[in-house]
Amino acid sequence: MIDLYTWSTPNGRKISIMLEEAGLSYRVHPIDISAGDQFTPEFMAINPNSKIPAIVDPDGPGGQPMALFESGAILIYLAEQTGRFLPSEPRGRYETLQWLMFQMGGIGPMFGQTHHFRRFAPEQIPYAIPTTIGIGGGRKAAPLPHHPACGSAPGGSRD
Ligand SMILES: N[C@@H](CCC(=O)N[C@@H](CS)C(=O)NCC(=O)O)C(=O)O
Image 1 (cartoon, rainbow, N blue to C red):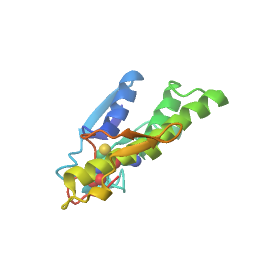
Image 2 (image 1 turned 90 degrees about the horizontal axis):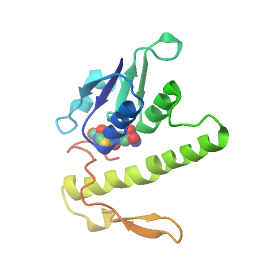
Image 3 (image 1 turned 120 degrees about the horizontal axis):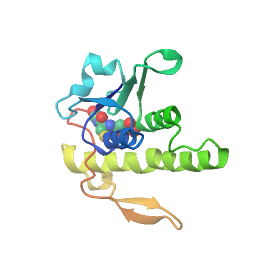
Image 4 (image 1 turned 90 degrees about the vertical axis):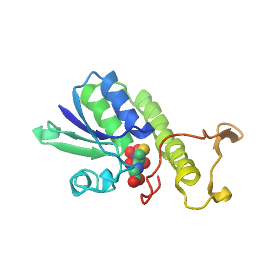
């Protein structure tokens, strides 16, 4: 059974949704990032970058336990383990991966930044608060939500 280390944030939910949709059995270990659980030595042995989500698959490749962090890497791992949601034929595979990279590299970090600077920054610096994200043809400025619900606890790093 897969061990899921997570908290109730968009990045955490991505893995919960994947595990549910793939019909996998898993055990949830709450990591309260507002209480600093992500900085415990036990959790940092799984993710040295101190962020949720992370998983441990006791039955990983070669029958050995596999610990993984970064939601995109976890999604690819679970997709490949189950043969679901990531086509094996090249065209569909790359098309799927491009949208995953788009979310990981573009959308997710901007949500994290806007949430951090709006909610946790000790001083409000308007220029630092991303309010829009350049997206699509002609780089339309799509508004960012006010409460994306992911970000860092005070004292945590931003991402
Ligand atoms: N790129 C990472 C981002 C993970 C991330 O930013 N996790 C946040 C919650 S959504 C976190 O653990 N923040 C706690 C901290 O930075 O101290 C991923 O996709 O897994």
